[in-house]
Image (cartoon, rainbow, N blue to C red; front, side, top):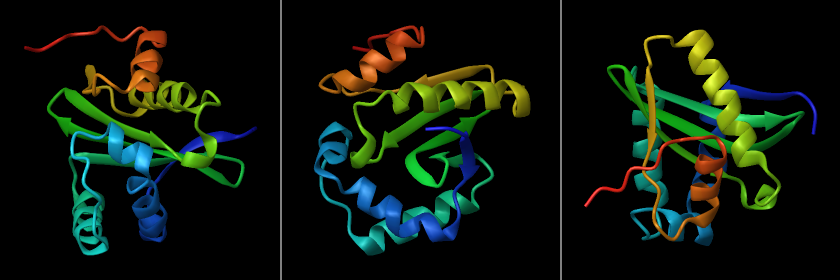
Length: 141
């Protein structure tokens, strides 16, 4: 797919993100595995898009929404949370999305010096992507 971009999340993305969040694979790879109610999602979503400490983006190729990536910014560190739409998994989009994010951070957010992510041990796809992009693995005990 051509013309890959990261665009800001808008209110019109709320329902799509709710569907992606409740996908069984997404729930299994999340630290909180219980399904999310729509009311819970709505409150969370409104808080995210209103926060100055959150950068919330949609990875889009052409007219297709492929995935979402959210940064929770704390000083010079940003914590990554991302997912790929169930329709586009296993096609390399996760790595492409994260690479675009790194370019955007370098260009538009130079105060962010460190990108971090917590990955569940069973989430082999995310572990592979972060390793491929040369992130350093740190195991906390």
